[in-house]
Length: 151
Image (cartoon, rainbow, N blue to C red):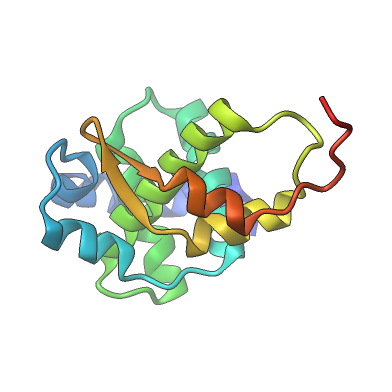
């Protein structure tokens, strides 16, 4: 199914779910919240799908974390990830942490995309300065450099 067709079919339900996305937009994470977000076992494909979905949602709607998580909840429903709202929040957190890591450490062609999504699916989220990020040392251990030219 085309991603835009999926968005259209999910839109009504996703907007209804937007009110239940508080976990994904929290700025102070308890140990219990972190345990919930880290408790999901995602595949690299699911993290990649979430990344792509968020890119498309952000093109169609103003950047709004509640709407983003609502669409991820529809994706979680299709993937049979339970509980749906927590799975959506966990995917949102991983996609955000991946975007932060990529902006800080990646340069085009340095890492294999499949390996990065695998690491994003496996690496634990930690809270730093009221943001969820990957433990950078652990994340880096999970991704061998594809071709380091010594720069």
